[in-house]
Length: 247
Image (cartoon, rainbow, N blue to C red):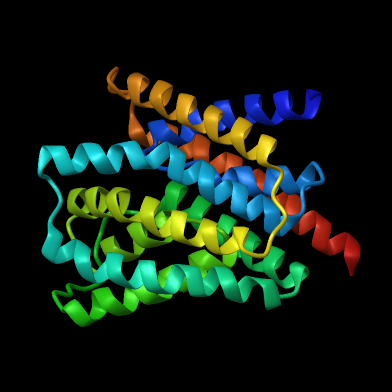
């Protein structure tokens, strides 16, 4: 019982911080669960569901506000929905140490984008084909690693020249649904602690609402992003420490 309370408190705090930064906390919850002894595959499944729980509300709100550009969203969403479950299924055949190493790279990448990434395009692209390729690639990678892919998608699409606000709205809309499809794929072959899942998800939802409430005070996003980046750097360094001591 004490473990469930601990995981709930950690998830609540992370979800408040990450929702203030406009994203789910799944990417941070996964390695923490694993550090405390939860199987890495199960941790990815739980992290996926927790991430979807905190962001699906914003997806519904964006539909009601009629701010979703469906011509931009559909190529990305369709590929995410197809390739995210394929990546999740492929994950069962990937060595755990390899998966952890790839996850460590993702943590360093995401943290660096939050800390140093600039909203400046490398080049402009208006091709629908590019959106299909990006959606397929990110969907598969996200499925393998057990993340929704938002931390990969947002900086990548901005680098391709798409308007940051439109990117943020689109990603917040599509990621929860691809995340849930990956989650159900993991559930088909991973043993899940359903009480832990319930505790973490409930805390993620509560934390998401609290974080969204704090956003109304117009806290500076750049400061929040730096806090998020520091958390991800610490988790990445912990994984790196693990690898160096297993050599």
